[in-house]
Picture (tube, helix red, strand yellow):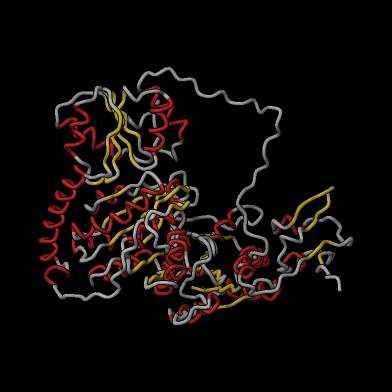
Length: 620
């Protein structure tokens, strides 16, 4: 049995933050869970996916975040509790749904989990999704610890049903990927079937209906604000004339700083867990009892601006500071040391940071940039494109997309020139093709193609743009941890009842006249096929098919065979200079292959001028 299905109230477990969120949803009786995977939210989905195979939970990996929210919204309007999960930029994709769903509302609890990524550990921006609470008019909950993530998730369903609208649970990477002790609560049996009552005058937001629904949304906002005033998740600690207002993981840093600086008798701390709508009266009373207030929040000055507005309304003139050159930045994550230093500076407390140890006699750590895995088929495809381009003498632009293959930007491959968002590699080539005379070759993965690449390709065919789209089909959603997508053979997971969409048939149905398929580990044949596609005037598509090396290894889809470099090697280093596979290393000025890392793709053997790279012969 999955550990998160343990029905022993009071039992304590060490859980990852994302596991705690999944457990909170199970305790709340979630019946439908949907997602498009994205770090730092992916483990929530993984655990719910696993539990769905042992319980009555319906779980799906949706085509994209918009569809994920639509499925969850329909389920919640049919009377069953639903949750959809995504990373912060995923909510951009689902925003069209969210804005109107706030008007339409729900009949059963619905929670929208958005996992923000300060410092951009795995993201293209670090947007602050608290703004979506303000933009949509929906409540926002922000946990400060792993156990609170569980409790808040369960409570979010109750709040959603109390207000009749979805609730946003906003986390950050530090909560998602921290571990902590969680005390389990009882599991509520899910209501897996409901019914839909037709009510078009409240559920079909044509303008006349939407005007009425907007009134209801604003009424709910006032209800939510009243709830925030007395919420157990909005708490005040300490005593004294100084004040700190904080949220999320910043609360734990502030708590540590207040204790370590011995400010318990000088500073009160207001932690906002139900952070939108903000509890106006609670904050104004807090300000009135303070002589100065520090706002500690990662990201944008969302609370700071609101608190300053409350102070102005109340006629208060105390110093309120947060984002400033001498205090907190809008950039990146906070950390305990930085928060401690800013708290000490703001409250004029003597503080000497710990002495930084002298490491001058220790050599610097070597750089370890992210790299495509050993045996990754994307590396082979990029190499073949480069060789085909060189043989054709083309001047090129390479738009790329979100996925493992984005790492193709690094030398020696250097196959990424422009990136905006999921699916942009299917849309931006049209602009480059129209505005320049260069050959535009763009790259997109199989999962990203289904997510948001199809509309761009439709546009290209309709407008007859001149570019080549390379679809890197490695048979899985690799970057976020090997989740399925509509093109995956689900029998690999021993799961039945799923459909499977052929990328080739989709591309053909869209009207693409030139489609070539390659097996990228066969270099010569692939290069010839690529040259044929690149020479076509108009829209052409190359489908590069080869399983993700790690996925193939984990599910034993291919036999592994290692290679070695024989004495025939003349040390030209074409293998390293063209491929940079991490299975290579240099020792005593000679190139070697790590037989443990090598998966046997044999791409390097095909470019070695001396044929010096050969398969390892097993004894016996």
